[in-house]
Image (cartoon, helix red, strand yellow):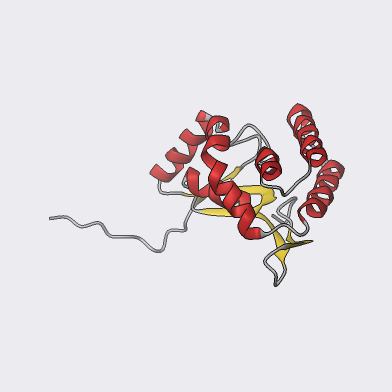
Length: 169
């Protein structure tokens, strides 16, 4: 019987995928705005504003200044949100909202990279509470996402611990 021997001297390789508008057709954070509205996290006005931001994002993407404004807006918007509630709302609506907007070609590429023995890393400026469940659903090995500061009360403080955007990502 022949056995397989792992060669630990070979470096690991990975394929990196941007999530928003690459693996899925929309902004992952903004996709959940209706769920956050129904869950009482955002007002009707904020839900409408995020729909507008989603439209602008889909129509032409966002330059650096627009990304900074979006970061500031979303940081202020989520201040005081209970992290456990956010995770629960994402888990409840994940498949209904994300399955229909996954690009077939991206899902196939992720499978092909796994079959070739590569790690798959999903990268997004969206928050880890949204990106990690999507990455898990897609079979990603790792996720790089924005992390917000969580206070002792289990709520977002409105401060950004790590912003997954730009050359330092």
